[in-house]
Image (cartoon, rainbow, N blue to C red):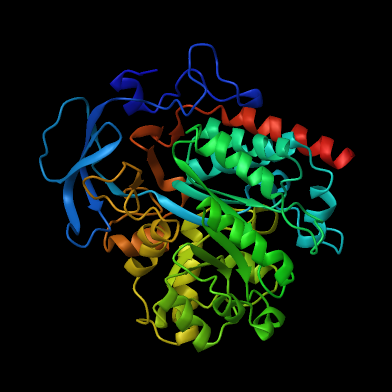
Length: 464
């Protein structure tokens, strides 16, 4: 479905929006409609490419063809519409490397009582969750991500109770259409002595990923590390993932107790740290553990807000940067933190590094933006696909308004992005060349309808 150039530039919503159950109208395809044009040029932006060979281009253009970046420069020529981006910053789409999408169903519900403490709430509601509940939670999260400028997400799906739950969660991805990883996890309340459903992981790989039903995504394992489960569980799960050729991800060294038993050290001793291994939180690590993470090429994802709010402690941004570990950022879970604003996470990461260092100049904001773009892409194995505005890469692009009251006047652009910008300043979001948001409005999602559906699903879950 194509819209006129005037409609796109004016931010008019496309027909065939995702509605009840994610179904599209008869006139629109079910998968990520958006505004499609084979070729166009974004013109007049401040281009923050995050590619060191290209650098920043003031009053620059980005030429896109067939979903791919063709060129970045000045006064570029190309067929198709010329989309004005003056007064805006063109940058790579944000990459969130660890997000429990399904928990968005009960956003901001944690931490007011013992019953709503994060883990207790997950178990209480998670064990009653239907496949439709996972669908609605994941769909709302993905729409929220799209609206805020996140174009790639690692869905750490840790409540896959049945094959139907997995399929419903994946259906939300198919309909909203972001890029990323689906990390298949154990359901809430799953015994620590029992293996994950390895047969269903293989089925999901075959039916959803090998068949290209989700062309922008790949499959991973949301695993359980040494110290949380016995070797009779973590080893077969890891080996099965490697046999399937999929990456693995672990919550490790999150608390002082976890740090004391050295989950990351044990992963290293088991030869389970590779470039395909992602570690989450990792607040309490030794210098030796950080060194082995760096040497083996694994990555770390921190979520500074959730780690504070759950009482884990302070994200080790300074220590990870000093150890030259591949460090990335995430929002983690909406039930705990409430907001999917990765821009705010960048602000907090900057402050934590400088505050712990007791030094204003300990880290610059370009380094923080790098964590949320190219480093995030690298950690998910997508560094050659997205993460920078580089010719040959796929066109995942965000335009941020620099003339809003909250962002003007434009001075230091990385500072503006990491310290001033927020979801409300995101004008345009492009995923794989498709314009999904323009003029501050989602083009192909009926957001009020998505919200209503989610509210009904939560009411039914709470009644159960």
